[in-house]
Amino acid sequence: MTIRQLSETLINQIAAGEVIERPASAAKELIENALDAGATRIEIATAGGGKTLLRITDNGSGMAPADLELAIRRHCTSKLDADLTDIRTLGFRGEALPSIGSVAKLSLLSRTADAGEGAEISVTGGKVVPVRPAAANRGTVVEVRDLFFATPARLKFLKSEKAEASAISDVVRRMAIAFPHVRFVLSGSDRTTLEFPATGTDRLARIAQVLGRDFRDNAIEIDAAREGVRLTGFAGVPTFNRGNSLNQFAFVNGRPVQDKLVWSALRAAYAETIPHGRYPVAVLAIDIDPALVDVNVHPAKSDVRFRDPGLVRGLIIGAIREALAREGNRAATTGASGMMRAFRPETSQPSAPWTPTASPYRPFEAATSPAPLRERQAGFAEFATPSARSEPVFAPSGLREEEPPQRHPLGAARAQLHENYIVAQTEDGLVIVDQHAAHERLVFEAMRNALHARAVPAQVLLIPEIVDLPEDDCDRLVAHADEFAKLGLGIERFGPGAVAVRETPAMLGEMDAAGLIHQLADELAEWDTASGLKAKLEYLAATMACHGSVRSGRRMRPEEMNALLRQMEATPGSGQCNHGRPTYIELKLSDIERLFGRS
Image 1 (cartoon, helix red, strand yellow):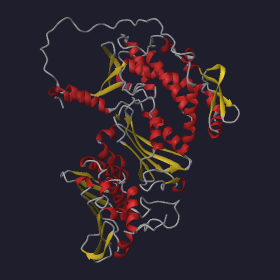
Image 2 (image 1 turned 60 degrees about the vertical axis):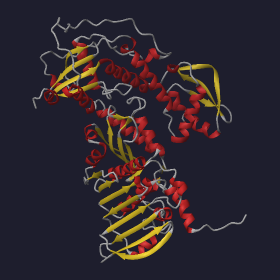
Image 3 (image 1 turned 180 degrees about the vertical axis):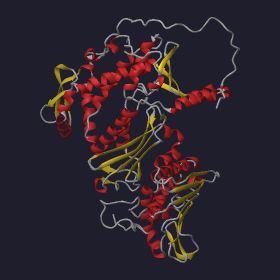
């Protein structure tokens, strides 16, 4: 078979298949070029979801006529010299413009600050029209029309105009968060305009523009560093969550990325605080020496590889968990907003007139203590607290009736509704607490602290289970044997290509030891951490805490309710139960007054 040299146009079209996947990909590349050129104002105009028209206008440094000729050639760039380990710009490969020009109708109009006039060059399906003078403002206007007209087969794989337009909006939102000092304006063929005014150094203000004002009220600031890697940003309180991951943003040295290591660490940081199927809202920025991260993994530059992934993952998990422990007992303000909407007269349904009957109020009754619950698993008794083994009777908090409620963040108990909800008065409002959800969290935290404070009881297997594994997996597992032993898992090398499991955590009872070993081996191979076993134990602790907590329907004495409130104030993460639901909702006095038209 004869080997032939491909034409330049065909080479560019092949490259376009990797670099330009859809209109949003082209928008991302062109916006990155504008930012690298120092633009402080970027306008994006689209038609047909970007398939018919995509125009990027910026006020950056612009290009001279000679630069325009080079810009449309492959591997021509002003952002890279000879060192691929010191990349400090968004773009650097020199592939975007020639790739776009090979599959679309591309034109570039640009003028530098010291030039008397601008210049324009165009490329249609790989055919270049030479540079010519043109009137232009300072900066660059890049116009892409009829994307993929030169490769019709690729055009068929694009989604609807609405879906493609939404993808472009997502690109603009991510860029806007990364660069708060830049003004972004996105306009579409449906005559709608999305504008993000510059906020300077106030990153939270820009984030609020993109994610909504509620995020500002429900965000916890993150600022941590470890071994030269710094993590900053904001993470939402656990009860401020969403049904998808679209409101999760990550940046590495200012570059928006979609990195599975970051998302995995984010999930782990919020473990046991958010319900299954719900996602935290977070904006994380990682600053790291460019030599310690590879951004040249894929032509689209959305993936990165860290030299020490375990360090980065541990930093993310540790920083977020520390922040949640510091402020995690806050309840999302959206809970109060939802209650306000439910109470508004215009949203309520007509009801029959109320007629007086016997008093609906009943005095508090003494707590009853039902029979103890059965232990859930072998080994549970050692870790179960009295609260987990039987219906708890809270110790009096010492709060006297005449003591001002404002001295306590969650106030003083004033009533119990439907034998499940505690109503407490605070200095400037009231708090409604779900007694079961709140105590469930308290029990879980006590059990988790016990797990971390000492070694987990282990049960010895009568016959050790031999698990066959690749040699590399065996080496990694044995290297973490001491860590596993503290969690009740005893393993040792068993000849070449196998490990022997001699002990398993007593709390887990009968279990698939081989399956656990394979899972831990996979986790070590990818992250060099073995959190899977600890996660299993914590999951079981959460389940047992749920069954061992004060039940809904139990009447509590005033001193018990106040004791529960004081324990909540002293327990990290008490703002949500183990399943991620809020444990309390707070209403400010100003909110209540608005309900009655008094403000």
